View (spheres, rainbow, N blue to C red):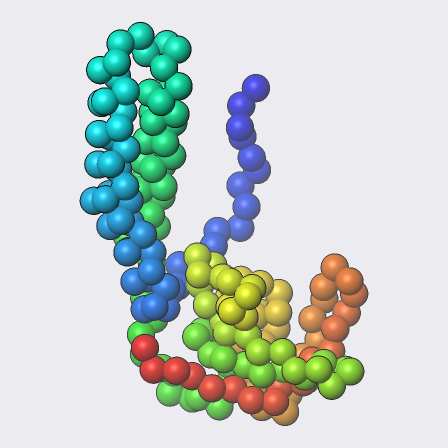
Length: 167
């Protein structure tokens, strides 16, 4: 049985300078620090003899495969990314990298930043530009109403504020 999955919609290739730096730092750490440490541990475990029942050797090889997989992914992904460093000319509208303060029907405030799919973080309020909410917000202005379809049903949100932060 294979691991075939149906091809999904490709993720956006945009990323903020901050997100690019974070992914590049992870790549450098994995390649220059973590991988050499694990490689050394595998060599030491292999020197102990019988590899078929050597848990440290087996676990180390598994770690190396995971590190190599992540390094390959990051290398390919970072090569394809477009770093968005410039602020949009019209900062009164919602575009990539914008911070948006929304008010729901109950008057509760929510703040989100539109970022690339590789840097989403719910705790920080970073949502992917590919998310339905972000798609609905694009090109909207302050005081616009936004209708978003969610699994819980239709939501109506009001844009209170839009701002951008220099990279």
